Length: 167
Image: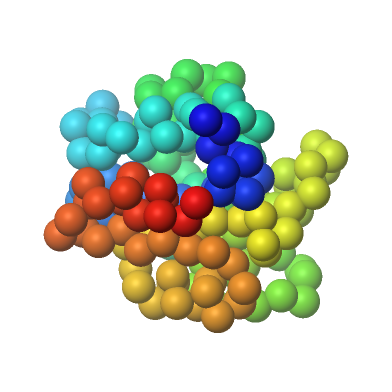
């Protein structure tokens, strides 16, 4: 079945700490990216690969300032070519000059959408999905008209079931 058609999305925004990762780096990871790989939740690489294969635009939206670390983790799991298709919006290291909401991860997502739309894809709030472990970011997205799923850090394996429920 087609992920994009069933969910009616063409943009997937995913948090990094406590979402893709099973731990929170606090934006201060001092180890290598190889050491961090053991903390990647096993279902995320296939989920991101499937999204990209189905031409769903993907972005990483995180408050962590460690862009190079996030990129290295993506490179290791997805390969350099696929990883480069994924904008990373981290900390305050991005620009967004639009008039949309800036709370939560909304500005991160909007900035990534601005970049992705230069490739000809048209992304709207209705065709977007945020996955985040922070309930406040999820509620903010929902309030702004963006679909969002809370990844419960105590039941992370529930995520795929929660995604299926969106259909």
